Image (tube, rainbow, N blue to C red; front, top):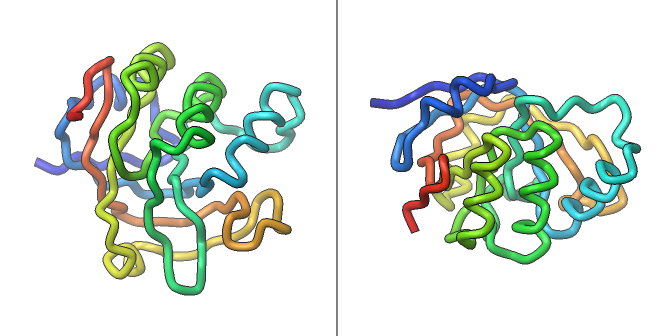
Length: 166
């Protein structure tokens, strides 16, 4: 059975997820990877992330390029270290690929967030992208902080409630 989530994602919908669930995500999601996520976390810590509500948000570990959008490895230090800060700020779902550390799984649980893996097939995701725009750090080009408008983005829940498929 496929579960459908609409952004912003309420806490009770994350509470209902289990490791291995197939999920389709729709709505506006953010994209960021190792170049931009530490900058976003710095703005959060300094309480300078004005005008952006992360409550119930989704962050996809990806860049946005003319070739398309596809997941990057979530176990990069800069990305994994951002997950707790972003989750504490309200992000409910992180999307990417690859195994994440046990302590990251525990932090996600602590903040009521989950991690989903997306198939690394850029061509498949193109049909699910309705639009995109740069939100912050445009000087980073394709690694800027983007917002995507997506419909039925597929993922498999890889970590939730302190459990992981890894």
